[in-house]
Length: 227
Image (cartoon, rainbow, N blue to C red; front, side, top):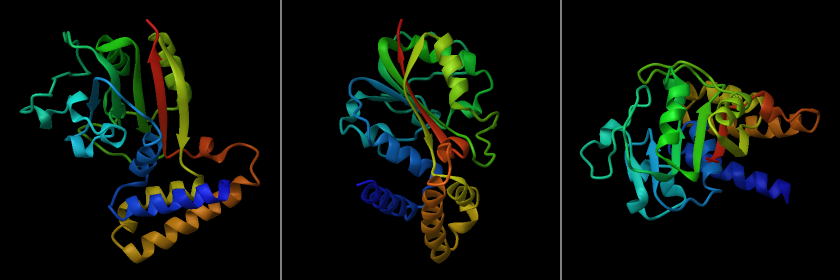
């Protein structure tokens, strides 16, 4: 059964690679698709409903709000600057914030601002790259570990209910690092992807520590606001 699931995962990975998505984004998509998210949700860092992670788990776009400046002319746009203090009265049941926090210098303030708009018992879904290239948008400040988020979120009255290291091992991480160049040569990309995936799974049999924890391309956290 595990072998069959690995084959299915690889086929899905190949499918999303054909859409020119980065390995980091693909891991995030495949992890997020396991979830069922309902009720009022705000998503940071996405441009529209079709590109949102929320759309992977819910077909009702009336429950989704954006806080991306590109959506400022839409009715469901809410201006929230996570670098500053905000005075937003609207509350949400879910916050999705993928590939954003690494671009914010004061993450303590960011989590405080996110907490203010989240209902008690609501959930925050966080994913950030780890072993991933430097990328400015407009700045790229840091790389997070699961342990860092455990400390930070606990201090902010959140309880982590799910934590995942997304990746498969050193070969897939290397493939991810080179993806910007590999993707320009399609006939090279797919053999390298398949070979890297297979070799990482072989290596995992001989490694005492879960190699995903040693070579995560990105990390994924789900936390619940407890008060």
